[in-house]
Every structure is written in C-alpha cells, then in structure tokens.
Image (tube, rainbow, N blue to C red; front, top):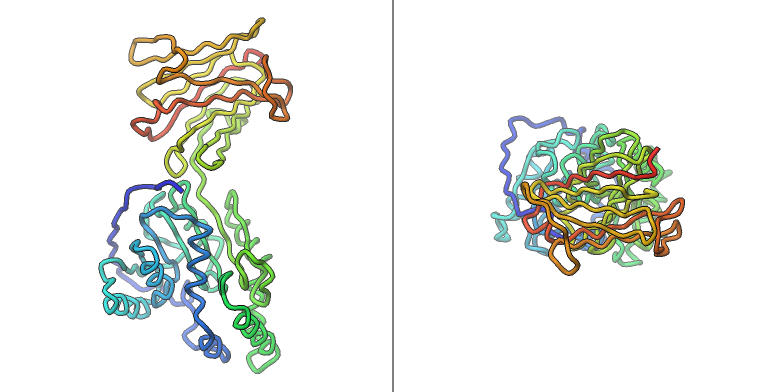
Amino acid sequence: MKPCSRFVLILIVACATPPDFALGQPKEVPAGVEYERSLPSRYEHVIADMLKFCEPAKGFWVDLGAGKGQVAIPMIETTGNPMTMVDPDAEAMSDGLKTAREKGLQDRLSAVVATAEALPFPDNSVDLLVSRGSIFFWQDPAKGLREVYRVLRPGCRAFIGGGAGSGYPQDATAALIEGRKKRLEGDQGEFWREFVERRRPEQMQKWGEDAGLPKFEVLGRGALSADDERVGQGVWILFEKQPEIITRKAEDNVTAKRNGDTLVYAVRSASGIGSATLTPWNGWSQKVVLRLYLRGLESLTVSNGHVELHGSVASHSGYPRRLSVKQGDRESAVEQDTAYWAKIAAYDAQGNLVEGLPSDGGYFEVDLPAALFELPPKSLTVHWIDFYRQ
C-alpha cells in the first residue's frame, strides 16, 4: 500500500481509567487459560497475518486492547514502526512499557488509557489498527467498530479478532482446540460455551453489520476450528476505510475501487447531470481513472482547485473528442503527448472497447493526467453532463 500519511506522533494524557469490563479481559483467569498459555506463543504468527492482510505503510499504528503489549512490542521488533497501546487497564500497559524499556524500545511504545467505544484520536488519523482478543470483551462491539472506522485514515485497514495465526504449528493448534472442547462440559463449561459463542463468525458478521461498516470481511471459523487456511484457528474482521465521496444529488452514486496501482472512481447518474467531490484513498494512486456510466458525454470538468480539465465526446459521426485545460482565466486546447492529455475511451457493458458511444450499461473511461496530482490535491471536483440526459 502507498503511505497514508507522514508519521504523526500523538501524545495523550488520560485523566481517568474507564471500567475494566468496557474493554479489558476478566481479572480472574478461568481454568484452562493457563494451559493455553503453556502452548507455543501465538503472537508471532498473528502478527505475520496482521501485516499480510493489512499491508500497512509506516505511520501511526494502534494496538487496541493491548494489555501488556503482547502484540505491540513484537510488532515494533518486527517492523521498527512505533506503536500506541490502548486499553482501560493502566496497570497492564505499565508492565508493557517496562518490558519495552528493558528491550530498548521505550522511544517506540506509548500507552493511552481508553476504551474501544471512545477512542481519543481525531478522525482519519490512524494508519493501522490491530486488536487480538479484546473485541469479545467490549461493552458495545458495534460501537467500538464504528469508532475504529472513524479514526482510520482512508485507505488504511483494521484487523480485529482472536486466533492463533495461519502459521501456528498444527500439533499446537490441535491441542488448543481439543482442550477447549473438553472444557465445554467441565466445571466452568458455562464460561467456555460463552467463550466459543462470542467467537462464532456469525457473531463477528453481526457486529460488522450492526456497526454499519460499508465493506468488511470475516476470516476464520471460530474458536474450535482451524479450517480456514487464510488465518488458521480463530475469527477476525478485516476492513478498510473508504474514501469520502460527496455527490451533489442524493440519487447519484460514485464508488471507488483500487486495482493495484490504479484507483477507479465509478460514476452512475440517474439524471445525467451531476457533480461529486472525491478524496484520495491512501494517497492518490499512480493512475486515477474516471468510469462514467453515461450514454453520452456533452461535458466533463475535473478540477484540483488550481487547474480545470475539460473534456467532451461529440454525438455525431466520428465522435471526436475535445480536451482543454483552464488555468486562471486562460483556457487552451490539450494536444496528445502533453502534460494534461487524457485518454477518453468508450466501452460496452461487457467491458469491450467500442468506437462510438457506449451502449446500454456501457461507460466512458477517462485516464486522468498525472499533472493534476503533481501537488497532491486534498480533493478533486468532477462535473458531468450527458447529452442524452433525462
């Protein structure tokens, strides 16, 4: 992934410790947990999955429900990137900070006393958020997920849940699962049945839906299964913050999708006349494409706040394209192979290139010139008019 931002150091002083049940795990360790702790460590495998699925750029990284830093500290050791721990348990995080000092990592680990439901970070400020084992103890998981989405920077990801990691040894995985199955009917069977129930993928799916996340993926098949080869034993929710897109008309629909180094904005307009403001997704990609699901293109204007690019496709024979650029009061035609040249192509509904205008379900595709992004704009404004508009 491309960098979400330059690294930002945020220092926060917490004035009060929220109640333990809001995020932290039970103070009393249930029978069986100590046995699981005697198995090989799961953290290195979990961290490998976090990095694989999130592909984070260097920046402001958060470990939510961090406890003693069991994820945060090895994450620093693996990547060199600083981490901020968040947990209502100040005592546990103090132990983590002590461990970091002993390892010479004191300048890369910080701690914030807070809960998932009230993260003390600005909107669009976090480049990576990970959390292992805490969502099952959040007071309101859906609200916590909404908070995570709020603080993520567009194009950046969160990986939240619990499990052993896809690379965890098979014999240890089998021992972990078998031990839990046996304890379902033991003296603390009620605890372990609830433990398993809250780790069902259907429960994680419901939390994501209740949070109103626009797009997310649930990985893993729960506490008693390692059948999902992507993550092994456990269950996780993975999501990415979508870029903000504002349309002038409620009935217009503009979506963004990244394909490798290409960022595609797809425009669908019921009336054929509209406008939208587009924000970058994890920075502007090497290539930005507008895909306009219109029957004709009487007018297209793309502005970065300093330069306006104007384009059109004639409706008569030959369907000539016209392209011009306006800087201040001066407007001039754009010639091919110059800085502001933009290819305008038409496609049918199956994605086949056509010579004339798009058929029903087809679209125009405009490769925006890199010159529009030389001084990366905070946003682009797009206006369109379809000469076959309703």
